[in-house]
Image (cartoon, rainbow, N blue to C red; front, top):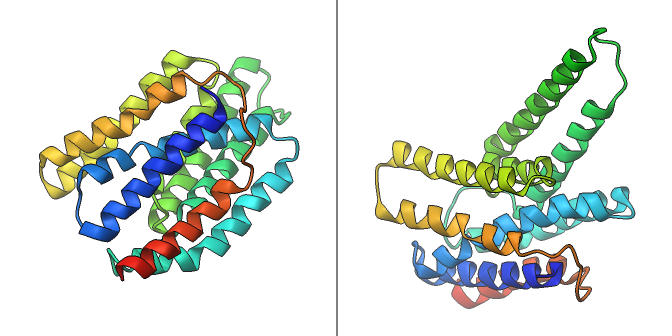
Length: 236
């Protein structure tokens, strides 16, 4: 499966998810399918970091569209909640920042200690600590998918060369996310279904063949705010 194929699956399931929330205001089968979208977007960020020819333009593009999409997101979000939140592009942006910071810290030449192995452990521990802080920041600021969103972007990058570790860490992250929800809000069978459908996209990710496929560089960037606006005016 190409990158284009993954993006199409993510866009379609995201659209189904948003239609479900706008139309019914509670969790339906449409929102279960919608759980497929974000992990694919998260994976694409980790891949984008590895393959981009211009990192500054890539991160700048995410930030600009995060700002540009916020008015549309706030209008759409008002259909289902009165809380102020930040759209998914902010999550993707900070997730990319987390990867960059991790690499900068771990690859930096230091003289913390003479033991090379210990020096490496200290740098990786510090880098992961900073990534966790960025995740906490996303959760406090009510980014879409919050702490979980930042962590899975990072995990997809961290285990990019070890598919089994990537699968296991992703499943653990999803299980923890919904286990915490059950502890906070009480058991409901929908949490089990949501967890299963959030894990499901790992199948598509594992089928990824490292090829780009058809180029749709800006389609997703514009599709996101435009479809939110259209849904807002239809269902308000």
